[in-house]
Length: 456
Image 1 (spheres, one colour):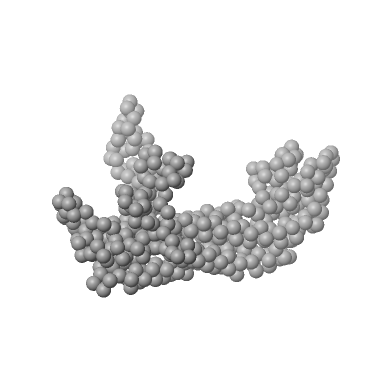
Image 2 (cartoon, rainbow, N blue to C red):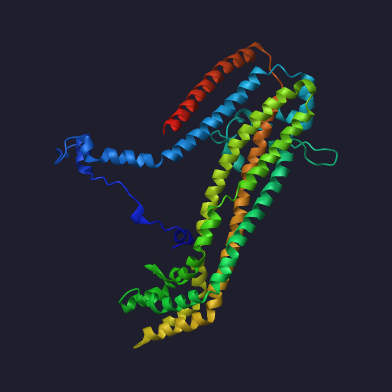
């Protein structure tokens, strides 16, 4: 049993679950899913089997998650479509001189390096995975394409310049601050509780009660005692887990409060601030007649960045949940490791009265090692929490590195060269029509969802 499960114990008497008296066999026979299975024995109406009602109820359980995913997708589609529309419609508003000025200041790779589009992911810049082609990712994974990576532009001091390097540098500080904040939240919320729980006489007293009862009541058969001892307390039930239950119960409520709090609000604000700061710098560096165009593109870029940050936070929360489970399960292996010699010593007791002597071995050993069992256990939890914060930081770092590149891709439409041949002009006109239809349909869906929410 983990701390996670101890921290939340619902009152099952207060939960009113629906009851479905189902007849799965008649449902299968009415549907004709199995040939030669005979006729229904009780029901002739499909609805009377209650299987359709059960299916509908199961689908309703995931409505909130599916609606949230649909809203996020619509937001992403709207921002992406608006970005394409704005770019295509305003493609002729920027002069060659203005494009060159912006490119020299904000492009992170030399101009000659992106002639084939490789600087921004080639022809797949709009995709989440720029290497989403069969075999391509495998080649890149083996390092066969590393020689084609474009070099970064640097200033007079050898420092990388451009959108991506500047955001990467700012994001690194944001991630480091977030990791520090996480460790502070873990320590302030749990360290004192862990120390108090480790020294709690009630925990120590219950520990001795469990030594006398839990392991030696696993089974009425003496041979099973030996099996449990040979497996260092882990047989059918885990004696090591039950030994630390008094301690984990003592910190369960604080554990829940820490992990149910909004641990990433400061991170989201700091990341958004870094993006806003860079977009403002890009706008300020643009020529006077170009500022409105740059501002419009920056607003679209910021909206896409918000969508990307939401996805990042979802990924981080998954990482947090996984790390929380791992941390909450780390105590049992620690206890097992501390008591390994005790298990081996107890195994040496044989013959009449051996069970009583084994109890005495455990009581004496734990009396001597209670500091290591509980106090060192508190250190184990805090160390694992610190490692969890570092793992979350690594997840954030990777996601923000991708976001920095995506932001440069979105801004690069301001300085990319324009192809003015008739085919390109005709393709842009067709793109405007298609994107307008998509945005109109997204608007209809969004309005329908809002009206549906108001009626409910």
